Every structure is written in structure tokens, then in C-alpha cells.
Length: 204
Image (cartoon, rainbow, N blue to C red; front, side, top):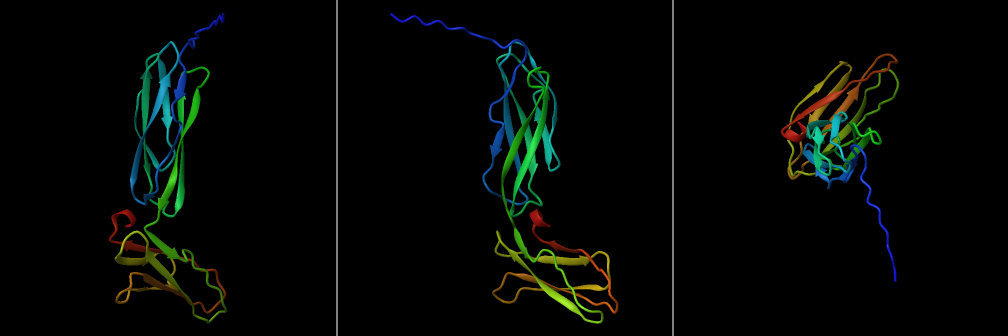
């Protein structure tokens, strides 16, 4: 004969339990906006209050259930912007605060790979030489996820000693190019930013 004894225990007060605190999304194209619902269970015997949700920069807090009854569940909806993460992994940690005395704060995590729309090579141009010499380099802009990308305009921001020439794709080609050049009659540190405007709304 076997005799088993069991004890049932209910957590006194609210108890916050994230069902899946980590969400990894499938690779997406830069510019897409992601939305995910995190489910939070209350495994206590008192109402659980979510007092604050703080997503980092690049996220927007859509909505969250401020109170979850005992034995119930609620959700925290988080939106994520992928602009600027092309070709990189996106990782966001969201701080959640509750009135659970044993779990007053915890983090939810969203991560995944973002596919780039264009590949810029090199993305930073470094030129060095002697005074009176014209220095130059060509930057290639290659559409990765689309067959065609039109560059509508180009602007430099600071220095007139830096020049940029936009070169359109030839027949049967899709890559754009920018020839960057600089000239100075004396030794100097010269820098500038080149901004390109495109017809792609996700990489405008």
C-alpha cells in the first residue's frame, strides 16, 4: 500500500508571473513596425496592479492591463520601430513595475534581426593626404531588398571644402554611387555629413 500526502499552497498577496518574458521575432525588413503582446499571470490571492511600464527608446507602449485579478491574466502590448536597425540585431528591454512584494520589477525582452534595405559601402569615408591635393573616394549604394531604389536628392551639411557628386546607375545596373572629394590648401581636419533622399518610405 502506498500513501501519498499533498499540500496545496496559494501565494499570499499578488504574484506577477510573465508567461514568456522573451520574444524573438522572425527577420523583418527595416522600417516595419512590430507589435507583441506579453502575457502576465497573477498566481496570487489578491489583485495584481501593474504600476508602470517603461519601454526604451525605439519602442512605444501601446497598452497594458493595470490590474489583474487573482488567478487571472493580463497583457502588455509593446510596439517596436525597426528604422535605423537595417543589417543589425535589434534588442529591447522593457521595464515593468508591479505591487507584487516579491517581484516589484522585472524586464521583458524583444529581439530579432532586421534586414537592410540598402547596403552603403563604405558608410564612412576617411580621406588623408597633403595640402593642395584633391582627395576622393567613391561610395556605392546597393539596394538589397528591392530591385530598384531612386535617389531623389542629396545634401551636405557643414563644409564647402567637401564635395559630393551623385552618379546614377547605368543601363542594366541598380547601384547608385556618390563620389566624395575634398580639397584644402593647408593642413586641416574637415568633416561633413551627406544626406540622401530616396523614394522608399521605409528608408526615405
